[in-house]
Image 1: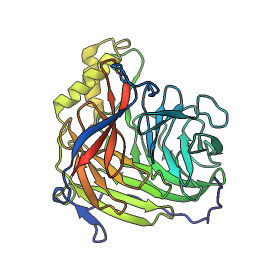
Image 2: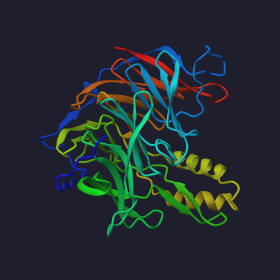
Image 3: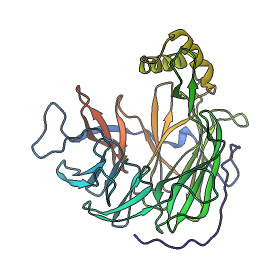
Image 4: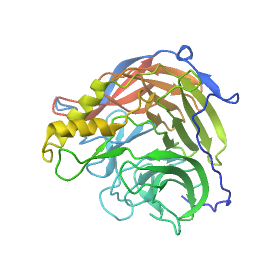
Length: 393
């Protein structure tokens, strides 16, 4: 991949939680066609046995589906296994280390033209490979910029070779503080040419000091700050604003797609039914953290009380729990329908709803296309494998 010089233009867009503008379009449940899933094939070797030559996965992270191949992230090995959609083991991409083509931590993966790109948030670089997994080049982003607050972390790459990076600035020193998250376009190894989006970014963790030895840092149970990610084909960035509260008497989640120049491709407002955050949910969450921190908890009662007081959870769950974008530019939104229930909604490249579906319990969406999805399932020994489900429309 070749880097291009930036134009020096600065774009600054704050995603606001307001009611739908006239230029935006709205999506309701009636516009979403319900689809069912039909199980069709398995890739990977469950402990119950598989065919000779099939891959065996340890832990499955990010997955890129490209033509008849799957690039399956293996976080424990810091590499991607390359397998065919028919189940044949083809090869691998990357490996542990600091050298060319190595990874310290697997980030996002995508495809631009004939290249596969992978972000590494520890080495702070994006590496490029051909479709066989052969390393070709990389671009490193500096951890810090001169005379600027906050550290940079590469998240994706654009089709022009520039890197999409994240930076938190402001009061981000202590746990629980409020900062500003910026989405930047970086060229030439550290030159900021665009600030595409900026929004408030409260810390997702809180500190518990009562009932423990020292200090316990735990994640908040409910966070409604925006979600964002780069398109894997390098065509732009997706921002999902998901306030856990009503605006002008209605409940909307804003889904915004920007291109590389920060121009709006689509601006959708998706209505949703609010799901309250119950006190029992917060108690169960506190109990789960108590079990995890058992070795440092000295007074369980004080820990529970301190945790519940520190959560500062909103009254409602955020409507969108997760996003996924495939190489075709389809946008997938995991919508919350209950305290523990979800459904997936698919939008096309212009934000128009295509369909919605639910996945079986104890599965995770890994990849998908217009015809179906790849889900991560595990056997009785927690060995993961991929299962192909086709859509029944």
